[in-house]
Picture (cartoon, rainbow, N blue to C red):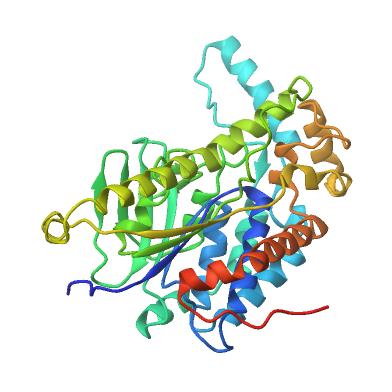
Length: 383
């Protein structure tokens, strides 16, 4: 069966740890453009890292957009760091001591190390997500495909696991591939396993880590799966004034910049690439486009109006004491705005602030969003 021509809109959710709560606020504002009981307007859901978890939550309730976002918001608004990760301080010390002993006696050393244990996240996923609902939504037409991207440590490829319709076929390109799969907790754990933070996850005889690491083309899965337009929720704030001088970067600042590079730089480049291709396609005659299988793909990017690092200042003290102690080893103090802390701050007050920011940012652009999605703008709230 071949895929029918459509105006299917894909939703692309990126990674960013606790920052992904911002995505919930954005989607909540979008949901107000639609009546209650309507299916999700994004039949193609693509997620990476924490965005993969949000995408899967939405896929489970694709038949009722409002219900899905309400459930997702409830979880994020009641999170605590202990629900996601636990610091393995004793294991780190034991690992270091064991390594020293093995080196001294000349025996092989298992160098795999992760600072945090993600078994709390695994338990949370198993408790809250009914993966059978994804299959039901595919069967009854509320969803076309769910795609989760992880990084293959064995091959160095970016691998997208997708659960979709029969016409969604695997693909292989340089450095990236797509595989049909039944999405389950291991796929989400693999996609969110940031190096040295969480241990790699084994899937189909390969080890996988955070999907953002090797994801040089974050929009590629949505395009391969048939999207005609793409709504992208980025967690990178608008560019800061380059003329503003800041103090010398600490080790924490540098770590935060590295994480930002992993999660946002490839997306920014891919969006620019898509826009250039769209401009080039306009110059190609319609007949030639059909021969070359070229298609214009509309896109809209929604991103924070504020630097999310700055929001950590009021919430840093709510992190567990042992995690605050670890972050201080990296130069993070309560008075610092740091990206490193913002990725780990799975605390309800911080997440609630991100949700509210995402909601306000999107509400301010709701007319633009509604035009993109081809729906009528709802009446504005007053007061």
